Length: 216
Ligand code: AP5
Ligand code: MG
Ligand code: ZN
Image (tube, rainbow, N blue to C red):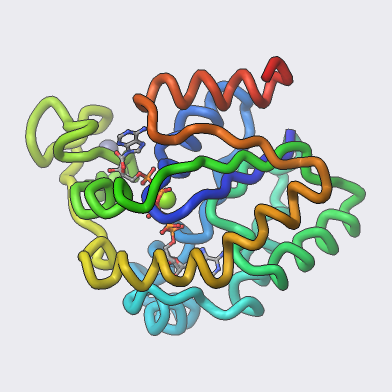
């Protein structure tokens, strides 16, 4: 199954993707995670991406499309994929259509996690991530058993550098001006599934699972 997760920053794409990939047995491909890894490793890609990510701006399309193109060629995508945070511009969406057409594949479902803007700031400023395994927590909404420590692997939790109030504002503006129009693009193709992302994490997972299984 070939799935896209859409939604504004903090909607829960990563949180839900971690769960959904286990159920459907497809790899989780997050362009944001790929950029953060390259930045941590200090590669040329990471240095270039840092100029944009640190400001809350979108990384240029050519760079982002190249990463996804390479990733989709890997063998684990033969069973399908879950793309989280890509595409984010019309140009990226058209590029993805082209890549998939070359591979003789297509998108099955586009899941849009709907969350009101007012909730997103609290979600993002309270988010914590495991340094070792990447699991996502929230200090209020999804706290680990022991503060600052990952439940899954015991790793140390950290806060993303773009999760400050100022950067969240820029990220939301980027989403509204460049990404939200993709909802019309996929709705026009009959692929869009709207899910209420404001419910409890488990309820949202249940709704997405039902959607993907075709019972919603
Ligand atoms: P990226 O890493 O994709 O960030 P984002 O889109 O801003 O989304 P987030 O990861 O912040 O939110 P999420 O929806 O995954 O929420 P999460 O599940 O963590 O991109 C980062 C940067 O990389 C971009 O700004 C850009 O510079 C660059 N980039 C990436 N892709 C790009 C592209 N295609 N083109 C160009 N540039 C690109 O949840 C958030 C918090 O809420 C967590 O603490 C979680 O525990 C909590 N939470 C989740 N669900 C619930 C719930 N139901 N109830 C209560 N709390 C919840
Ligand atoms: Mg994410
Ligand atoms: Zn961990």
